Length: 637
Image 1 (tube, rainbow, N blue to C red):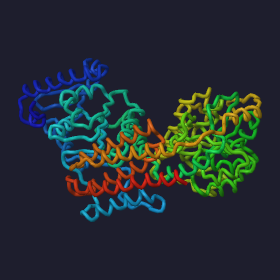
Image 2 (image 1 turned 135 degrees about the horizontal axis):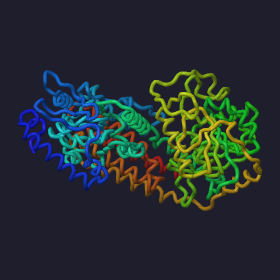
Image 3 (image 1 turned 120 degrees about the vertical axis):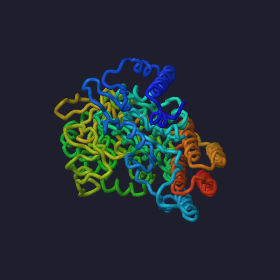
Image 4 (image 1 turned 90 degrees about the horizontal axis):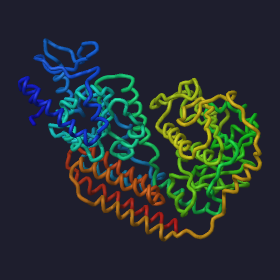
């Protein structure tokens, strides 16, 4: 095939018609085998928009209004010129938007992150010594994560492809099947897929936008799609706005919850000290609702409901909600904690914990647990040390906040779940937390990086990446553990899978609460036997060697680096899925180290990064060795 840009500017009308017809037939053949549903749509007649071609050039016509998408200037269609201009240096083209996750090359606190931080800081020093620059640099034939919201013919995409452009990853949204059909006259989609990293080209046409698929797009490229993202939108509509919102939310969620080896190793130490407590085993559902109480601003107006129904439901207080409840004369049945922090003991003393039974994650600071007159432990999913015990119940979907652990526990045990004060965001005109909480007097400002989300009641609610992640995890917990109903009484974010309600909308039946609490406690049992720490260490060493072997293979270009990082991302993801006690322990720091490596490479003003890469992976290898050494010391204590 001739290059499309040359053809459209120089060939006769007949030659152009022949060429684009051939391209359309080729695309039909491609989609007939790759996506038969899309193929069936493509062979239907145009309904609203169609390609229009006369002596004035190519254009898109609205069949209903008999109007054209691209204006005619001096008797010539502007469509070709618009797309030619869009194909010029996208990373430096003002018509494109370059977004990043507010990440900068800055040194880490080595007191908090002695291993991860030291390695990242030394990589930055290596970059400085080799002449790093303030702006990012990529070769002219390589684009990072690219998102297209409406291509209106897609000529620019084919122009870029024909010039040899390689897309690391590509999301393409086109809300009108007619628009996508028109693009099939120009874009060689089979060739385009070959110029995107494997399994990294995602097409959404018409009503096919899926948050789960977009989330997968970012999760499978957790590092390479986290920093730099190129975006273009050729038209706006409610569907496009919705697609943009989904992409932004998933992009924001992807940057959170990575963790670090330092945090995981602290949880490892605490877990080994906490294994003498009764541990949750094979839970069964109780015939009583469980009310999960968080410290969000909406708790203030729900306190009367909790007081009135205290005897008809088990009350889980999550984190700092304890102080608010006790200050208002409400004694929760269980206090939920998951924090590793050293000062948790002081927070519980101030509340005070008193006689309240403690239900806590395995990684909680032992000094805090020791305050409780009665304490039970659950193995909290998402933490590497939670998977140390074989054939043990793991409470998954219990991160990132203590409220998530409370919701997951309630979904496991409760006949029904009632959510109070789990706002997962900022309510317009209200403070972040309930009155009289541990956090004192707070302002009502909404953070600049917050985005509006669906509210559970009638108030405007704004979320951030971490709150959005929390809401997603609550929704997944409801879906996975399947209580009869999950009722959200709060004024914060809407939680998918829950029923939005107000206290006057329903009435709780009387229940034998005392017996239900006794039954709940019976699911926590003392464990027997010793951990095989040497087998654990051997698994860890083997995985570290696998990572180091993958890292040691030589590479030269930034394109190769992006691919290498995705391979290591997949390696960590697979290990965390199959051997979480190893994968989860190490993956957070590996992700941070690789992200720092990628950002150093982006700020290196040459495409040949072989020398920079060798020096940086030496630092990464040293960090990985220190992780093994740290775990060895923990296991011998």
